[in-house]
Amino acid sequence: MATYECEVCGMSVNATCGKCDEALVNGTLNLDDGSAVQISECPNGHGKIKSPMCCGQDMTAKAAG
Image 1 (spheres, rainbow, N blue to C red):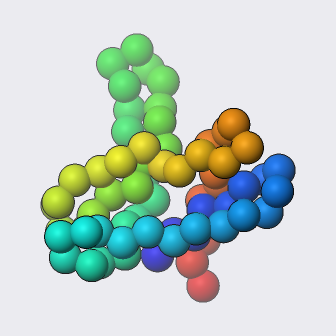
Image 2: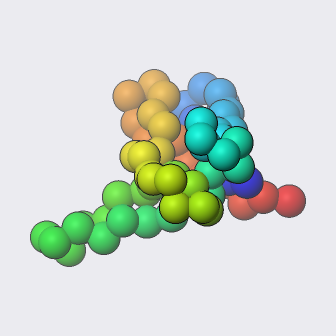
C-alpha cells in the first residue's frame, strides 16, 4: 500500500477502496498535453482518484515496506 506523506507538516495517510476494501496503489496518469498527475487506484479496477493533498500541495507517495 502506498502511504502518502505531506512534506510540509509530516501528516500521512493510507487509503482503501470503498467497494472492495483493497489498499489503493500509487500510479501516474499521463495527460494528453504530456503532463503527468499522481493518482491512487484500486487494484481491482474500481476506479482512481487524484492523490491526496495537504498544506496546499500534493502529498508524496512513500514506498511500502
